Figure 1 (cartoon, one colour):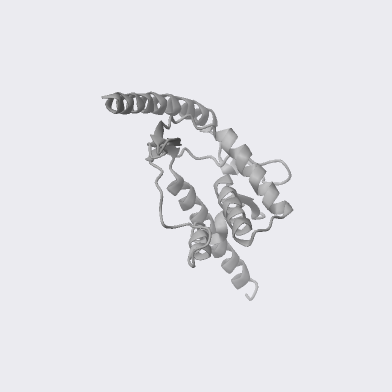
Figure 2 (figure 1 turned 135 degrees about the horizontal axis):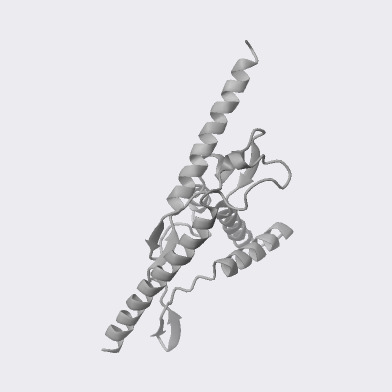
Length: 195
């Protein structure tokens, strides 16, 4: 009975949270909806703080997986497949200025932490990554409720509850399309040099 009520409360709070998040995200993006990449030169500080698109909201239920481990024989390869073509970097503006999506910077830092744990050594870069991830987690301040369950005399957080997320597949698509367009511009530029 207790677990049934707990599940109902979690589901109810999830829908309340999803509605509030949708409202907040909608208000934020409606303020930036008129921003276009062509409004900027991408020189100096003349670039948008956020890439101008409105990601849809999706649900993600975290779960343990055998993939993305620290020491497995496939770990390095699996972690590298997290990036889209071009590594998640964008070339923007007439001079193809390079920017990165924060999502892929966060993945880069997870990879550096995995390598530091695997090798048993840290560097200033790893220290940067640890602080960067800490701060971006604070920035997200995800209010999803995760119930604490008794587990063998200890308390354990049950993290396999739905989270409301921005659709990361859209971010991957934008990064991949931007990289393909950059390669095409580069090929056309190289081809025109011989005319």
